[in-house]
Structure formats: C-alpha cells, structure tokens
Image 1 (cartoon, rainbow, N blue to C red):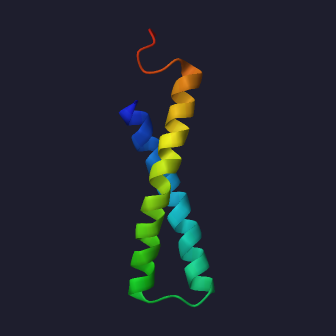
Image 2 (cartoon, rainbow, N blue to C red):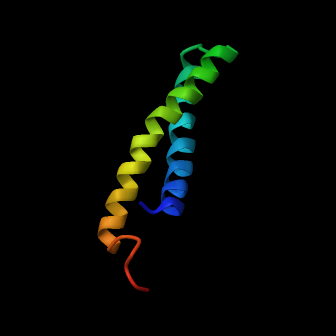
Length: 69
C-alpha cells in the first residue's frame, strides 16, 4: 500500500466527513462538546475505509507503488 497516498486521502476524507457531520450536528441542535467529539470519532471511523478504498483504486490505476517512474 502507498502510505503517502493513503495519508493524503485520509486527510481529505476525514476533513470532508467531519465537516458534513458537524454541520448536521449543529443544524439539528446537537451542539454540546460530547456530540462534537462523537462526530469527530465517527468521522475518523468512516474516513478509514473510504481512504483505503480510494488509495487501492488509485494505486491500481497507476500501476501500484512499485511501478518504475
């Protein structure tokens, strides 16, 4: 697995997912610290498989990390 690519994909996915979850939480009235922390944890759990899947698909398209430049 391409760890630098995974790190970038996780950062992007994590930011987007917790952003969406926080907007949903604030709009629905869940604005306590416990709810915000829960949104962050849930965002991290959701972002892991998303980043892994995207990394695998991109690596497959580009020929993997062992491909000669």
